[in-house]
Length: 354
Image 1 (tube, rainbow, N blue to C red):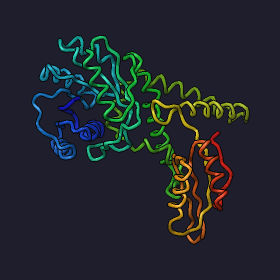
Image 2 (image 1 turned 180 degrees about the vertical axis):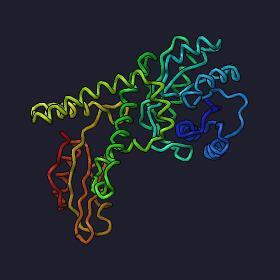
Image 3 (image 1 turned 120 degrees about the vertical axis):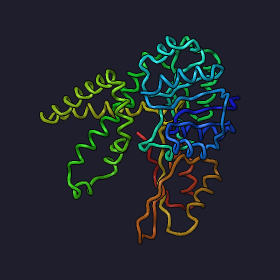
Image 4 (image 1 turned 45 degrees about the vertical axis):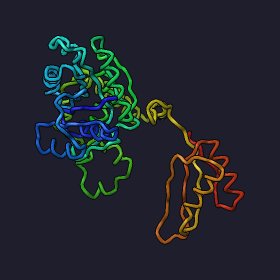
């Protein structure tokens, strides 16, 4: 079990790792060029001075990443050094060329983040249920692989091993391109007047969530990964042009085909990593606007041992009734429907995810 970890970089990702490791009673030290960030991070994780850490995690800007890795391998020759940069650019090869201690280095990339940055935005559960990429390398020792896996497990993520040559192409498609699209769309709709923007709905807000990200950080990432990212942007522009042509020519079939392909692609994206995407059945229940109604429904579920996966509540001011919709697996939904119907609840037919 790891007992001492030093984290270089006290931003969102580094401090979130620290908070997750804190829950496992691991001794931590947070360091940062910004003394205020370092102090806040250490206060959050209960940081102490570590002269001989077992693991050093480099969570720094791309421009400083290689330098800090090499420095850490030299300063702490017995420690395993892990980087978490989102662009690799043959990083393992460069470390092997410049350090005699390369067996103690292993590269990785947690696929998690937020649209806000900084130490104050860190969360202990940031990596829970997320993917964490480990970079395959013949130079990394068995010990370094084992310790990376241990950290990923403590953080609640799922470890996936990827060849370094494939990493930058992969993240260009699934991480960097979505950021480009969100930011570009925000710039487009930002030209509308305030009155028009007041009419926007949740769909636009969902699309623009990433546009609140840190531009200074993302400009470094995108330029560092310019070859792979530019290729993905070109592919997207081809599809967008094809879609636009279908609209101009009133080609209903082509538009519908694009939507159908998009529906199928969306179904491939998993919920929690390591598990197949789950389809739920939804059970609508009309309830009276009275205290204790929700608790009574939970009690009914407990009586027949069904598990509620999620729920939503809709209630308009001034109305005497409200609508609770429970998300369950199909078998539980059907059993609960029969049970609630027999006990007098105003329950409606089960709706199944398509």
